[in-house]
Length: 381
Ligand SMILES: Cc1ncc(COP(=O)(O)O)c(C=O)c1O
Image 1: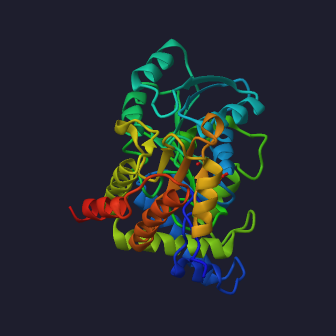
Image 2: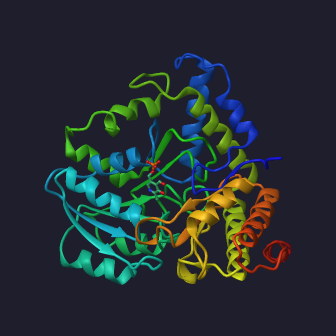
Image 3: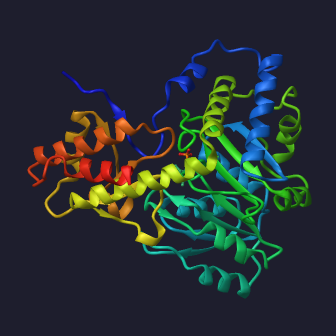
């Protein structure tokens, strides 16, 4: 008999039944008054929950589209951008900005560590940058950037727009747009919102909106804030077809978040992450991220000596659990396990038990039940 399949990669994350049901509804016209009402409520809730006096954009697309939207609306050809990179997704901004004709400088950390806030401040004091990008959680390393401290520091640099990639963080790691000095925050539907892929979400604070205005006409069309602003302010208007069923799914996701409470949701993610990380360390894995900068959304687990990545992950998959491999220099040396969104406690226990079973099957010594016991104990404390 085959086990139920659990997709535990760091996005897409498991989609709960009530969200799936929204995606399975009969699609209506985007001008349907009930749909317009739902879309308007979703936009209002997102603005309130992430606390901005600016605007939120809910458009069909992925996280990468949102990255492009953030850069396109805040910079013009020849501008200078500082990319703070803690891994693969931080680096993604480099190519994106270079293609746009921006002058890019990069501050990189060792994988697993962060660029110190003082190093960013030093760079910003040396010359003027029109934008700084920071990836809140880099999915390749499992490192969480100190976005609040960076935002506090950035307040002295009036001419610099602060862009935060929240793709692997928003909805799980604490974020408040205006209070944290963030000018642009964005994410995708498939991570901590627990919806299928296909929606890009972007919050633009007052400073980012002013910057967009100052740019005049921009070369991009679909991602232009000015094309979408009339729709975000009045969703009965049309610019490009909204992803009707995904908008409903997002609305259900936000309803779940409101029911749980964002602060409770953040606390739950923290508790689960630390319990999972401790349990997995007990089995012999090493968490790549420094203890002071570990994300709550996923764990990047470096193999102990003697485990073959391909064999381990295919054994896990046979047992029903799908995890992601390491990227770049960590390909073959680590696996990545997502534990964000509307994750189920029964599933987490099963994941640990299955990891133990798979370790046993590939010949690695394991005390069966040890990680499960450690996790359950930590969750009860
Ligand atoms: C931190 C981060 N930024 C950006 C992206 C790109 O998002 P997408 O794959 O939805 O285009 C990802 C994808 O995993 C990510 O983890």
